[in-house]
Image (cartoon, helix red, strand yellow):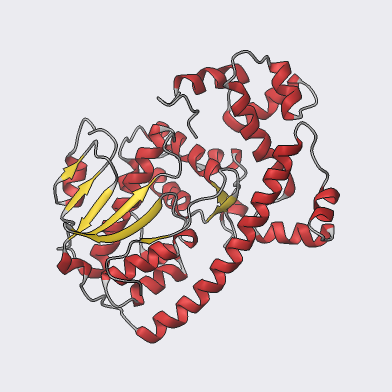
Length: 362
């Protein structure tokens, strides 16, 4: 394990269109919204996640796909604390082998540091880090993009810390409570759900998202600790991390290649040649990533269209040409499929959500 006072971190997320995230949050989101009488499947299908795909153990989703579904799920349920509900519904088994490794860790601190180190395998949509400070053992959750849509940002932070508290109580007992929780978003109208869940001081509008673990809880022994099992599972996780990095590198290289080529789209054969690969081999590698070349092209085009819509001086014909669509009708159909609105309606919505920095929200 690392030095007790050294921060533990992991690599951040990839480009927003890369399908590299295990869809654990979306699966639990679907369960929770079902209790509200809200069927998420139409939303999931719209972003390319039909029922057969969602049941696949190899499925990976992009940050953009996840954000779209989350934003609309909050709107459909009308629950401004939906993230708290989704986090509280989880169990470590939802994290697969990583959850098993955390249960086999020696102490709560070891479990947290294992989760942080292998967070890219867990389906996390925040970037975790942990370290000892004077106040205690601190677990931080940062957003990959500070200009993320506010609704999605609040959901992700709520889900992140709600799941941490829920899983800690499952392992250490119902008496567990953090020493303090600090959240960057403003205080909601009703703070009681936070008080009831965390059972500690909760400070809103803070500089950073932080949860402070009292020393006795951070050093508490995990009831399922087993050093042999822990070491064995870590070996498997390391292999998975290596494979995941290779997949992520492939997706990012393809995205960059497509983005730099727009409005032209490199053929699949061209991409295979660039990777010194056959078309069959490249298609198989993309299948292992849970995606297709067509889906990657669609994601890059979508990102380009949204960027271009920010430029008020551009007409729809300009955007059509720069994004590589055959005509304006094709652009309209694509935007309708992505967002359920027209390009002009989307432009209006993007401008209304403009970040203070002037950057578009994710």
